[in-house]
Structure formats: structure tokens, C-alpha cells
Image 1: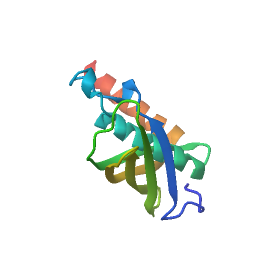
Image 2: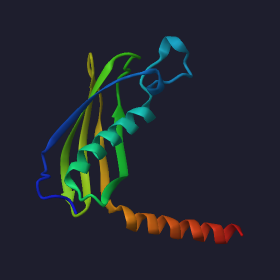
Image 3: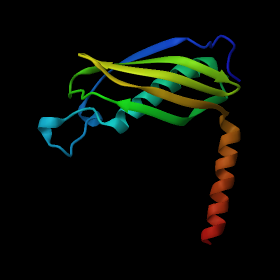
Length: 138
């Protein structure tokens, strides 16, 4: 269960360098900019890592929704600061407001939702689903 010390309005931030693996390649080397899927992954990871400080050892969280506007191009080698703020807590569901800045400007706003799960229970549900898929393909 989520620790009572997590409160709506709590803030957390992380700074990340935009390395080549975080950039798009399809526009050529002159336009190596932060890829939206990598930005989303970094947002999810930031929220996940923060939330882990407030759940029991046998728990973790899974992403359930992402809604962002990626509004600026961040160049290879620049840094981004991902700022997250707890917008709501409803049982095991936590919603974060997200703002991302690069070295020059704000490049993203939005929200990300996560759901706290018991890892062993989730493993059991996933195994059951895998067994059902196996039975369908047999």
C-alpha cells in the first residue's frame, strides 16, 4: 500500500543528458533530437523511481496512462530536467503532473498515471494469461 507520507503536491525532479540512444535517427545526424518515445520512457522512469520510495518492498507500480505534449526539440548533448508533481492519489492509483525543460526552454507538459501492484500477484496473473495464450495456440 502507498505510504501515508506521499502527499498531493509533492515534487520530484531528475536531470538527464540526451545521449544518442535517446534521439531520433530518421532525419539524419544533423537532426538528432530527443525522441518522444524516449521522453515518455524517461518520464515513466522518473515517476516510478520516485513512487518506489512510498510503497512496500513486495510492491512496485505499472504505468496506466500517459498524456503529454512534446512541444520543443531538444538537441543531442543537451540536458533535460523532468519535474513531476503528485496531482492525485486514489487508493493505489497515483497521477503525476509533468513538466520537462531543456537547457533553453520548456519542451513538454502533461500527465502520467501509475498503479501500485503487489509483484507476486501480478506475476501470477501474467502466468495465468500466458497459460491461456498457450492453450489457445496449442
